[in-house]
View 1 (tube, rainbow, N blue to C red):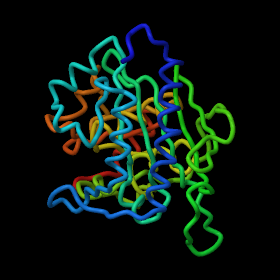
View 2: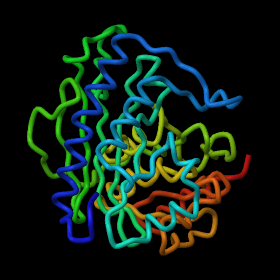
View 3: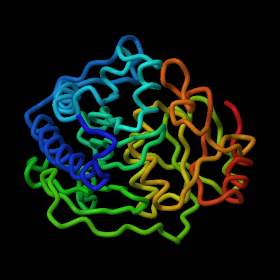
Length: 297
């Protein structure tokens, strides 16, 4: 268990150690072969034994200070609110974000965790261990130990990245700065596409490669100009410190309102933000431009 006296650098080291164990585990289990099921009648919510294995590892590493996807419903909103409000560190994680691309052999998935205190995510680590897919040839299977990816992190207001092989860093963390180039593209995940429309005539075009973690990687590495969030607590929590370290802010659609002071208040009783839409933009002018292109489905 961590405490309010645990430094943010120590917390970052703890999260790095976790993802460097979890990412190789996920790669190995995927190479061995997986059976994919669904969480109830919702065919959009996939589950594999790897999700559960990484969930168990997450609990072993972070103990009672953890809110994570596979067990969050048992925890409940009141308990989540109390954990997040403490001065002590609380961890929010998604064992495998992008389970469907993970099980399908695609690259847009990864392991992610954030450290929160006094009501807000402060630091995060996410690993996309298959991100560097070679697209110069037809798709093929690559051994787990040879699979290349990227690790992204944020701590104390700074963003970092490192290349990975087999789910482990092959170089030290290096600074990551907000890309200044423009692509005209916005992250457009399936949950958003179910509820909203995007007017391409306004000059914004959708791009998505899987889940929240791949969306974050696309924005952080200059493939997207902005993105959107209306997912769940464990989808946004582990990527929000990276967005903020890169100078992106949350704006509520369509009024461009600021987020609440407490992170948990972004979500409803099911820890979902499906009934709200948050724009992740550089500034209010960009948010206003993007907001004008969005309508309800």
